[in-house]
Length: 232
Image 1 (cartoon, helix red, strand yellow):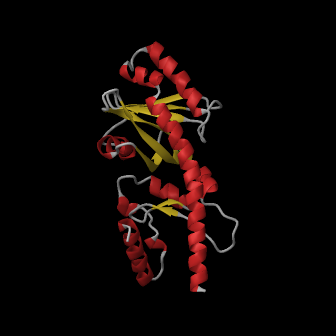
Image 2 (cartoon, rainbow, N blue to C red; image 1 turned 30 degrees about the vertical axis):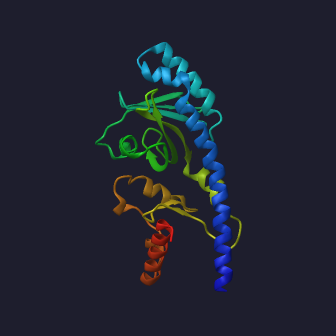
Image 3 (cartoon, rainbow, N blue to C red; image 1 turned 90 degrees about the horizontal axis):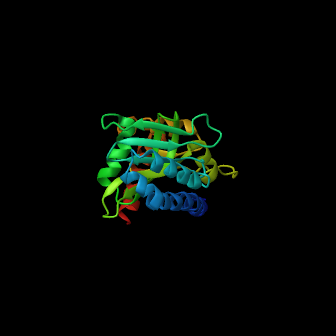
């Protein structure tokens, strides 16, 4: 029975990995293309130019129609302005806000500017949209390789769960966790949405260890994840 459970877990992990790669690679490739697009780069250098901005928004529309959620964002370092281009059926086609380093919900941007070299996936609650999403954040660089902003898109938690971890097999439940064990994707989206609201307070996030009843089993899980993280 133990060997059967092990084989089933490995099979499910490989299936989950394949689904995740399929979703991530598509969204990431589009986000990377957006970050280096000449029209977008020209606007970034002249952000206050209305003609360049209008041209850039049209170009963003060409990208966002291919994204899963039909939206795309650009966040700029120089002005701290955050632009998100909304789906065609939205009342507001463009929403903007000012990124604030003291706002926990904006911490992702300032962290990315400091620590992210190319891209990251980030689960976060977006106050502008009022939704929790899995975000694809790609670093924008100028012609000299200097970071000038972040661009990308987000997939709503419900859609991400359906696309990646949903299964019809009885007795099997998949979930995705980060390096600290915090739940990133789970069939119960309330767990994901809860964690998304505490981007800078890991102590308030629900972890996989919290959901293990036996402390001894939780410790074994800690050790297993530590070995996986170290590649042992």
